[in-house]
Image 1 (cartoon, one colour):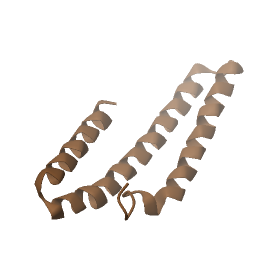
Image 2 (cartoon, rainbow, N blue to C red):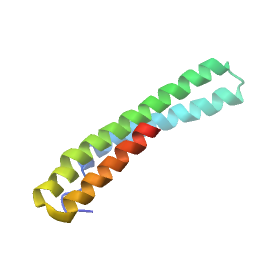
Image 3 (cartoon, helix red, strand yellow):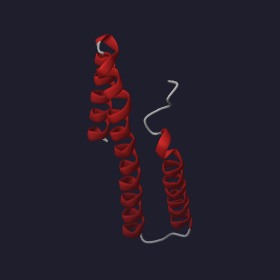
Image 4 (cartoon, helix red, strand yellow):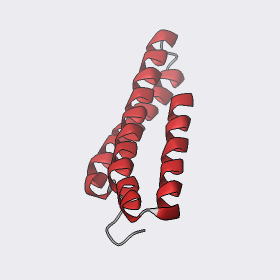
Length: 97
């Protein structure tokens, strides 16, 4: 890890809070299935959980672009190319999911 942390370091607590909330949503989904809840209600909650995870992912991506990629570009060279390629691959994975 770089001396100045990762791009998300300043928002680490907020990200953890959101992930814990999502974890609770997932446990709720398990309960819904255990309790034989209506399938459309379960699918609605799955959609909400998916959107919540996507929101965390987009926030992390934004922080990565503004911190890690920006820093690498200012240094130039192979590191800049590497960080841009990493970001492009991450965006592609998010779009495919």
